[in-house]
Amino acid sequence: EPLSIILEPQPYNTAFAITAACLAIAARNKNAIAHIMPSDQEMCIDREYMQALGEARKAAEEGRLVLFGKRPDAPSSQFGYIRVSSEENPIMAVEEFIEKPDRKQAQEMLASGRYLWNSGMFMFRVSSFLKECESLAPEIFMAAKTAFEAGKSDLDFFRLADVGDMGCPELSVDVAIFEKTSLASVVHLATRWHDLGTWQALWRSARRDAGNNYLKGPVHATNATNSLIFSERLHVEASRVDDLAIIASEDAIYVGPLSADENMEQITRRLSSDRQTAHLIINNKTSYRPWGKFRLIFREKNFQIKKIFVKPRKRLSLQKHHHRSEYWVIVKGTASVQLEEEKSLLNENESIYIPPGKVHRLANDSGQMLELIEIQSGTYLGEDDIIRLKDEFGRT
Image (cartoon, rainbow, N blue to C red; front, side, top):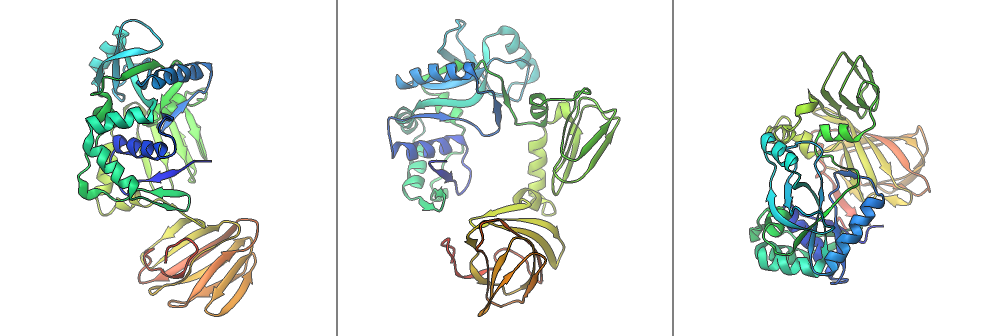
């Protein structure tokens, strides 16, 4: 179980996030060793990985700030590189950082044998890191310290306070700390490792079929080669394709060359800046709540359909809506429903209508997940049209 899940009010890049996490750890044990790991990586937890951890821990206990480097197997321009000393030691000195070179430079670095990919993984004693951060990046340190000290617990989370007015620099931990510190060291990570930051990287890391394809979801491919085809719900038929990434999510489809998918960041920026497509970036089809989650199935101007999942022994707030009505159909489990002063139990295939302005509450008093279809109709369907009168999660 997580010791804590820390939420940022807005992203300030990895230097701020790691500093805030270290402050949270130091509040419990300032001598603790922290192992920082990005979430978008696949790695084999084997003897080589455990050996690298052991070497990194020794160095961290001596006050070093340790990076984990991976020897390149291709001239990639998607990674940052670290130039290390020519001698192969368990702990190597950092000579230079190179941020995402062009392909020609990457080929030269691969041939030299003196460069490692920067995995984005680190290990250090939290007190050593915080001391360096306070010295080398004082604005980031003070912003993180203020955000942590003014933060508040919220159910399973710890919410950092908003420090937008402090002008916190949005820097990576590499730029803010590791490129400046004299304490940086590198451990070679010999295990299988993939950064999954691109579709091509995901394809490389996967088990592929005889045509060198990675297929996942309701997908059928005929005479396809060297492709990644992924679908969450829609059935995808692909015929006579080569070197393609075809990604069918719940609300959008991407098609592009697999070998040149580095432009996803630009595509994402364009989608988020256009009013017609911004919702694809801002709103996920599935939204999580303390009581469970809901999934948007269909939306038009004046109505939308959701599937709602309520965890066992949980209930939503006592609430009402000004602008919309709701119609609930139970598809699995038993729902306890309050509508004004009347309370009732609804079983599978039973339904109820909630008019606008009527006080109501939905609960799951059973030991299994409750699932229902909710049809909303009205002039405004936003989530902010909820007037909570009572709530178990402090949201009134």
